[in-house]
Image 1 (cartoon, rainbow, N blue to C red):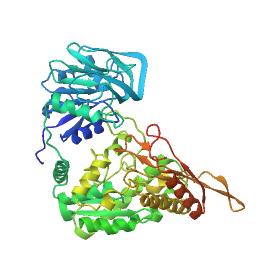
Image 2: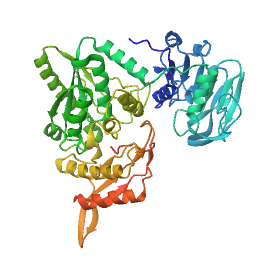
Image 3: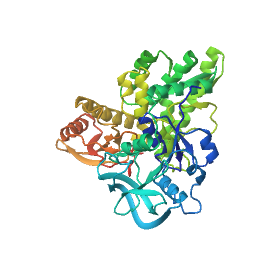
Image 4: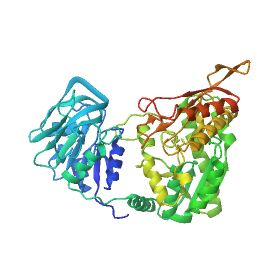
Length: 518
């Protein structure tokens, strides 16, 4: 294994944002890992953390089944920072008091900060992202209250004599105006840490981890057509070289031109061996009559694995050695939304997480499992992948299947593929590819809309435009596209795609809506 720096540990109390905290720490150029709250103080301290951050979580500290916390951590000679639930656990462990006040705060909240090391150089009034129904009603002894809100008298505190601090809000979320600065004040000024981590460090650590996991074995990688699987493949190839075979499954659910791009660009950039499997009819047959989105995801996950098993058999027949490892481009948002954190809720099953068959014969290799999309892009650029591949808009593994609300048929796929191609082309023409993070186009296949074209009545499908802006996929806001761009897209789709007679715009943030409709 590579010599990794001592970590800043994030103790996960079931937060949707636990890995996002770790990512913010890495943005501050410090190495970070997430560990479950079920670990004892002895286990945590054995990793020699430079500092510890206690995450948020869905529970209340005073209920019987609240996630346990080993208060020995607060007595160890290690800086500790609490966030939301972690802040309340910390306050209670230091002798403060947490209670249900009847006042809740969710979303953007006005914060009044006082002069302190935590808020140095920041405005006294600032906007933060809250998500709590309980509150610290009495700060621990020897702690100074350094921020308040209208509903929360103790919104942040700093210990006078020890490197301990915490906040009720979420500094890791982009909606907190000065969140990164607050985290860095803790890391640099309270904990006294020096930045020593970079994208190259991520690459070295992952290559070392992959080499240790696979050893002298062989692996196949399932390429989906997106940046995640391409970067995962490039990392693994850097680790094991020609013992990696990439399998690109053309499942018939990709966007226009993507099959050709993968075949051309990926091989040119990496030199990796690529096997292309035409499985379009297989997937169509498996999805016939299925309209439930979870059902679609699980079917697609199952069929992917079966195709990989067949491909692995062919690789074995050619090379003689068994293929035990399957490389996937799984990211942290995929894991946590599928209920993969410690105590996290299942938002939806991602095909490569919750959709895998129980009799999986491969050992999974997932070098990007702890990373977010923008971190993956940085890694891909550092590995030499072309910009067209690295900056391609995210696209779900199940592809267009979960952008069709209704049955996945060849006709519906072709309709959606043409509408999607128009939207992407006009976004590119307007120079907005990088300001819009993702641009799903959704076909409401089960809905018919009355329209008029020429002098005749039409009975076509609506299409939904879903442009969103995000850093990490955990939260997102709808993109304010110029009206003329929306108008051009709408006009072209209704003129050029005969089955569509209505185009609508989705103006919902995440939360409460997910990025994909299904």
